[in-house]
Image 1 (spheres, rainbow, N blue to C red):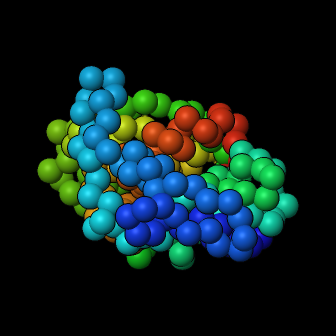
Image 2: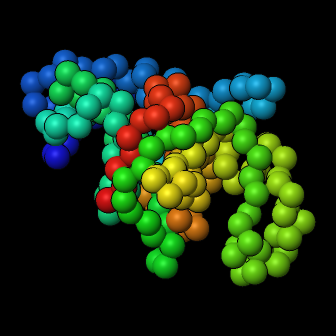
Length: 205
């Protein structure tokens, strides 16, 4: 499978097309990262000028064989792709698991949750005893580690324990610093949540 950037927002007036494809205006990226009120929570605007441009959400060309709706996570490049069909995919910047917490394989989206509760696994509580207060779950909110949305990954053995989820820590995108889950900026996980379907195939490589 190969991806090629088709649209890259640049400058202050618009976007430059790559490979002869039609353009998407800069307003798309600006609107994507503005402040959002969602379910009573006010997500702050993300300072997009401080985010490396390759990690901003953008449409790219896709010439692989996976069906539309498939999610492909490239942990090495720190990108997540949602195959759109018609030779296109939506690309999102991600943060990934730090050394010792990586995971790869094939799964599916079994559940989707808006403003989910976060329950640290017992292994994490052993490493960080201060998290014991959240053994019964942390209430949703702006500081919740799962952010505004979460997609839960299951495989043939059941719950993998890994999630595609939001984060308030936009500066962590493009880095390896999570406990294995795949994190997106909150505005991006909302976009992915609205596009992805329960049952979607997820390939993590």
